[in-house]
Image (cartoon, rainbow, N blue to C red):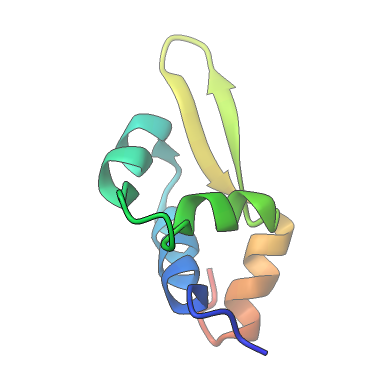
Length: 78
């Protein structure tokens, strides 16, 4: 059964797959005050994206192998 947030999680993972994003940019772009829309948290909890510290830059967000598999399974090749 599909979770109602799956299309938005898919959009987030695809957006990050295009290029690694700074954590601050991800949170700014995908922030929501709705407790039912936990897109960022869902993507992290499912292991689709991770945070990586980068010296001199801060923290960036990249997709994982599971994130790439998720994109391929939905016809959105990274």
